[in-house]
Length: 340
Ligand SMILES: Cc1ncc(COP(=O)(O)O)c(C=O)c1O
Image (tube, rainbow, N blue to C red; front, top):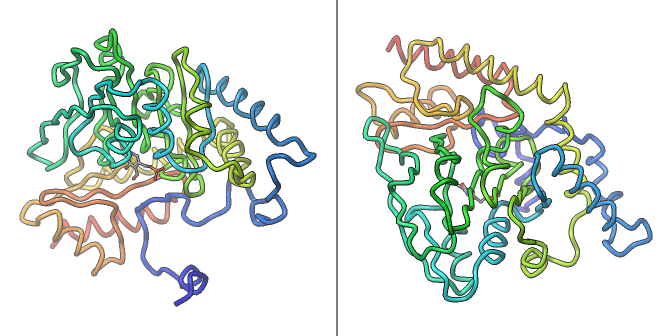
């Protein structure tokens, strides 16, 4: 099957997965004209100046020293952060089960990886938060923390920052891009950690693979970014990032996030087992069913696809495009499962 044919095939499942925009163009309608906006970085429109001004406006919105637009995912933000704050031979502390970009970043920087482990929350079968006592920071140049975890477990970034006296703190907030825009969501690391990386495409309605790198220390990440990125960036994608941030920060965007949270609060009134620290990651389990069985039942009996499952629980990911209809469908499925 050709790629185009595959993309045109109607997906009949209700997706609680990334990207969470729900295949709807509600942020940047004009992107339907992708080709029209596909210009070169050196062309007479001077898009490079426009980009640096857009990034400055974004850093004001987030309250950061610098915010970089990424068109190669959080992966590139993690790699650029490590390249920026380390020298060859430095030790970098990373979580043993972290996203592959963490170890790859350490390798690319010629640094030595040192691993830490996270305890597992037994009742849910998911990794617990990162706390300062789990990190031996002696001789460590940089540490990478994943918060939230895939399943929505959130670490106390302020406490971690306090512990990092001579160590750069890099927070992989790939799954927390909505956090800066609602008080009802966990606190974002964007203006606490030295480097924070967020995927807009995972939860914030952005297109694959748009993301952000927020910098709060005195180091300049642009050199590292230029080493790992193409010299022909996609201006339609960059423009979508700007529109995405403006939308999240707008009255309309904040209202949409508030609606999502309120719909999810309503879902939590269903008599089911819910876990996690972030309401937008629906972490559920059912007595007498393994996480895998629960996932299979949702898929086969209710046409609902989750994002991640383990032996005990299953997680359904929500974001800006997760509408009322989808959440009601899930509520109905959970009610049905409770009765049977
Ligand atoms: C925790 C975490 N960090 C980083 C990444 C990389 O993000 P991206 O796909 O935006 O490169 C992922 C992707 O799944 C992830 O789950």
